[in-house]
Image (cartoon, rainbow, N blue to C red; front, side):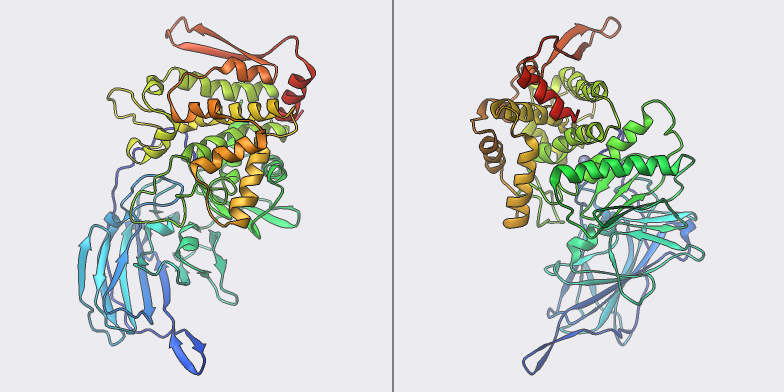
Length: 529
Ligand SMILES: [Zn+2]
């Protein structure tokens, strides 16, 4: 997730429900001579009157072994680490069996509806979801387009997150396009499938009359950009720069872990959310001609793209499998988010889409923010990660005493410190890139799990070949950062002055005049020169 500030989202939503009769689809799987019903569920979503902001959802179920079934709406979506209580937007929940009779329902808690259809009964539920917030982590529907956050729309059956899901989308009349990372059902129109709810919830859906920008292939893998109302800009130039950005990220990791990838532009706004084979991003190309705008956009898109590695696959132990019913707290969001900010800078620089000075200015900006944030004396980086569920994505900005920080600011600085420390300790033979590749290969590909706090530090130290306990104090304590030592490893230095107008501390990064061969080699390979 990355956002250009803002975002206190009020939770607003409305609903309505319907009945559904008849279940025709069944699924069986053979065990010996016995036919055993396996749970089958099929969702459909329609939007017959988009002006009322209501998505209408129907779920057909069969083969569930329980008498009582709890339907739960996730309380949050992975990538946006805030409790959203999407169930507040549900209206008119109802359930019917295949004979058209009402199935008894109890609302058990804020996000749970309990139905009692009886064992192995075919039945359906239906409800409406009010969708009027233009924000990347919320549903939106109007007469121009629809944006579906799957975790905010499709309830899971408690205890059955692992069942395959079939989804039929019925677009509003005249809407021709659907953009999503979900697999299509072969031979069917507007039908999609997910092997389980985790994949379903990892694939938002954009519906409307959308524009397909020129696609590009890297090592035979197609990357697409599909957008609603993308604005006026030079498509070819933009896509060429995006391709360089993506290619550079792939070169760092050395592997493409998906069969295709899609950038989904949901229209003007703020923020993006990462997924395994897609990202949804607020996007308008209208201002890309303005100074610095293209670089900001490429950093933003590079950030969301790099997340397909860092957080979706290279991930903290606590971030998967997800519990959609509560906060999934981890000390390591500074790795998932902060290092992704760090890599967005490196990727765009190494793709030769910005200069070394612009790379240094990006880091300088994080230093200036954190060093003028009084919260740095009170909250460590690991605490900021853990407490983001209470503090908000950028630290607690509620107006009280400033006792929190943003891992979006301090995280990339610690990324740089670890990177320069590893490079210095190994005479520039190893870097943070090696740490990322090790985490990807060892924890994602081999062990199929996330890493703990200790395992992350151990990975850095074994690549560096030395203890980095002093550097990790910047993660677990509020110790003031000694920038000069680490910057000098790359032949850089920092100066500080007070801003005459605001009195704020103002830091500037620059190159040292006389550098030794190791410093020069670190600066050059780090910045991709
Ligand atoms: Zn992010």
